[in-house]
View 1 (tube, rainbow, N blue to C red):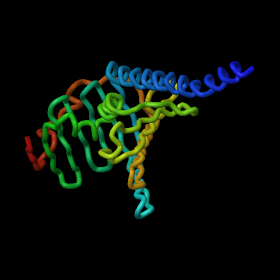
View 2: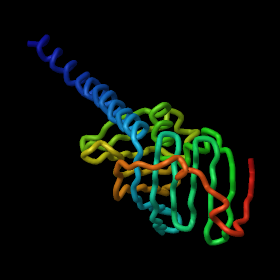
View 3: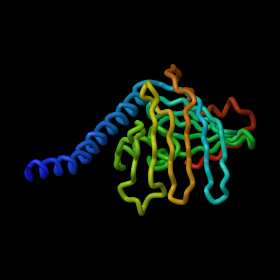
Length: 206
């Protein structure tokens, strides 16, 4: 009958919306679980950073490692080592034997701390989940954003395995976690001890 056809039409029209809404909530729940887990425990891991330059059609590859404990983190990437104790940040460049000391803003931390980055996107972006399980972040103000999509993939233990930032200019930044495991470290791990580095040049920018 006409009424049955109309009901079926309406059902098919709203079904994708219902599924999308459920996906959004599921994606948000998964991401919040990740953030909560990363905050509660101390994790260390190795990662690969790939930067694809669309204009030059080149890919730059760097290997690094990361230790993260709540707001504190220590990260090495190439010849650089970054330590942050929750307030002060030290960036040590071994090639020049110099360290720069700053007190980064919340905004600056979102660009260097993977946990702060994910937490930031959760708070401001639209989140949806792909059929293949990828969690996608879309900027709520696309005109003001340098990226149009951020793709987060989790492993079987619900920890980040890959983060891909798709830039509007065609560039692509990919962070691949080769490993991420629970560990125990003292808070000294996140502080740069100048005494241990003879003749280091200190740039205190605080």
